[in-house]
Length: 635
Image (tube, rainbow, N blue to C red):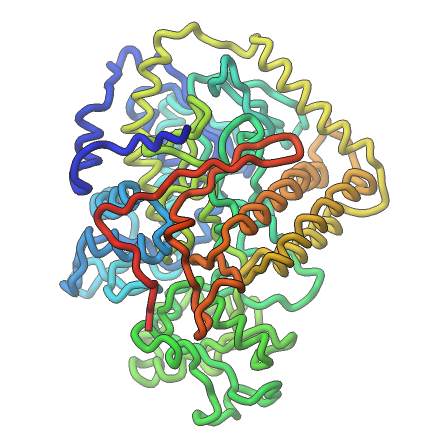
């Protein structure tokens, strides 16, 4: 049932072979075709701008008041590309292998190789758009390292790479808007997918300013809505980030792949109070020069500067000498949690570790460190009041990226014909753990390079079909279902806020389905989340009405989806009886506490179909023809 549509031929020739054999649509016919793109981040803006440039009529939606506020703006550290500028042995093949290994061999070879193959031309693409990447004195682009690799392949614009890339994509998007080839719908949130004869033909969206429900028809729908880690409530994501578009598509037939593969980032600012609504990300690039440590003595209350070198445990350097502080994110996060749980945590709540730049400043000089990370240090001081040039930062693991997402084939189409998922909202490239600086890469490549070359195969057939308008009964039915769902939520009129139930969900998810999991805890979590969901529908109080701007209603609708998604995540984690990447089952680990994969039984992508009250598992076998899965060691 799951046809990945992987092209024939050697790995290095698959993408070229695909492009040679793909269908083309002449410019006159492209004008007759309309594409909806939901999301305006790097993948959405790139796709909308490129499709419009090709001649398609495009409608682009975002819930923010401007495409510039998409969450891609928050990415800090950089974007990977196999250009080998440093002559340190990098290559497309090495990047492919690093990414496949970093994902613990739980992604498709063909997709990962395409990611590495297209990385080099993407940097040229961005340079031509004016992205101010960091450069050497002579003008050559400079690189740095990220976790999980031993070469320097990360291009960056200080600590604001995502912002600079998004501004470039935004400029292309609004150039097409000005040319009247893209229609922008800001402050609109997709609340349902419309199917006609089993094909994606439009969406129902709510105007967040007026509350009006609107119908939009198209020949294809592209979701570029980011990840769903706000299911943990406390995460590095913006508060508005949500999984509603994904979940509505899932309930209409799109399979959800590897939902439990969510990443815990090792360098976020620690939680400081129960009332906190989100966590702040500090770029992983800081681990290039910063050293991570905790006191060797448990419950040490001394200030960092008062703890002598002999009483400091540089635990990543001790446990993983080959990679040290640049161990992959899943490993670095679990190692931090282990030290914190063992009583060596620091900070107000004893839930953090130190990230220390004293040695780097001594070796390279203060001005060099300021030049590399100055804006990150300013942000840290603004939030904490601490000068990290003179005392260590305090960092802690936090929910971050979603490796799971809608199942897509090589063309990035879901199991619903005509529905595509690009960027973080699909599962395709990262496996069980995303390497740092690959998120901006995947989002950009999906939007700029892959989707515009694959969607033609579907749209060529759409030309032969009758044009579907919003007068079709399927739109009326979908709109009625959305309105009834909203009315049901507003009519509960209970005693507890949406935030109360989100906190309860977040506690269960963080405890049972985050860095470390076990069978008993996951079984307990499924029951607990079900109870929270039942109580939510009995006792939530959403103030205001639906025909107005109502942020409480927005939060309530999103949480209703998170409560169902949380059960699926725990179900997926329970089914996968192995430790793999960010998915660490306590029952499956080595004597040294490292992850233990079971390739014979679990070398597949778990793709879940929605059913009322239950989920059905479908498996896409992962076949490794070019790389042999090995024990993932960074020692």
